Length: 337
Ligand code: PHE
Image (spheres, protein in one colour):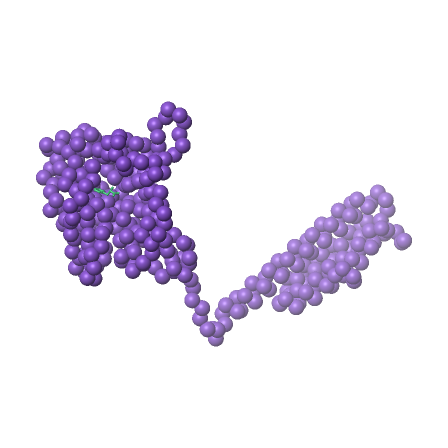
């Protein structure tokens, strides 16, 4: 093989690199870029290939330097090629995007889950009535889920079959996934003095078999109002105002006598909307024993509390017949809200 001087080998590479970069810079479309690629980087008869063959002619001690120069030039040309390919592809896309003769395509935006929308709407309506939104933990102790709510040690509501108890170390206090948001009433009253107007929306858990009206996890709206002189009339007005803002139009609220350990008297709340009565949840005047348990003086303040099912009011508002649909994550269903 003919001997090649390192100087002229490098000069040859420099020329090739300059030519390639210039050609690629002016290539106007994908075809021109491809022609340049074949000319400079083509595997069979590209100019780079031709120069590669000269490597063997370099004197032994010059070979490492020659190889290094060769690789640098090759990388520079490859980078210029990539840039040119990107540029013409972008230009083609822009040209297409600007084709005003194409028919329009709808842009599909995501949105919040209907239950989240419902929660925000309830918070907003209750906020206008002066109720502050608060949160509480989903993993609770027995004190907040039962004892402080006057649910005694022998009460069936504590049954392991009706609650999700968590495995805790032997001898430690049992913990459970809260079965109601009334826990938050206690947490707030323990920390603050009356007057209080709070609303808490969150997940609760009960080991129910899933069907059209039950799910082992669901959401409740808990309201608590504590002020001197509070009566059932205030409770009814607040629920009626809430229901007519949420459902729209004229809504009637009906109380049926009921029992909860932490309210006295206790009621079930029904709402009539569009000619039908539906059960929304429970409510009542906070039991004086509960007020005393958190250090309030039941002779000074009284209060009301209510707990409504979020899925129920959402199902009512949107006309959903099966609450399981809320959790199937079927986009065709969720898209409708
Ligand atoms: N916590 C009760 C339930 O889950 C509902 C309720 C809340 C009743 C507040 C009275 C007062 O059924």
